[in-house]
Length: 245
Image 1 (cartoon, rainbow, N blue to C red):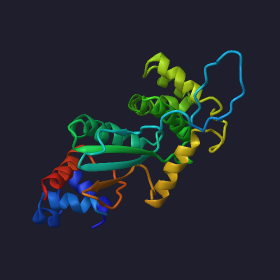
Image 2 (image 1 turned 30 degrees about the horizontal axis):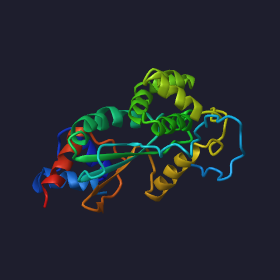
Image 3 (image 1 turned 90 degrees about the vertical axis):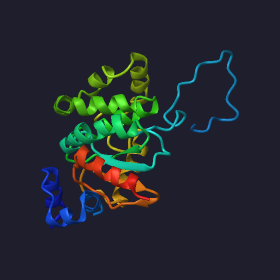
């Protein structure tokens, strides 16, 4: 049976015969297992001027939820203008974050994989990248997915970013976005280096569609999955992992 067919049956509560014989845990297992360096000798000035932080001198972007010491790590590759990614976030990742991530069972890591067919997908990844550098990743991600239809039709991502966080943080993000307007080709903005590194990691997986996720448990990385698995089904799988010795 094809993996997609199996997922569709299980998501509707109809386990295939082999799954019923093997038990819920085994069935779910089968489903998933398919600064810039500053110049040492700066010119002298009569007055000390405040330095504007560059992308490189800021802390590295934090695009994750929870503790890295959690027993389960889930790595997700997504495109913020992808409708399936929005559904996966709203129906699976969001409840997982408030439940198993909050309780220390799962560490969730985000990687950007903007698709060329989405007009503003790469630009959205830039805004999220800038937000992640000032500690606003969670608010930015929620704003992008919750308002996907609106900014996806107009390109006005800034409107929803500004409403999702304190004004002081948004101004910092705006400074980081200088020179990163929509008409700047990928690679022409300082923020693009991390986005492109994420994409390169995705190509190694390989990511063929978004969302795609990988699960790591006890040092073992399970095969990547592209299906938008529901949270109840994914929770069952996590419980089966956590109960195993």
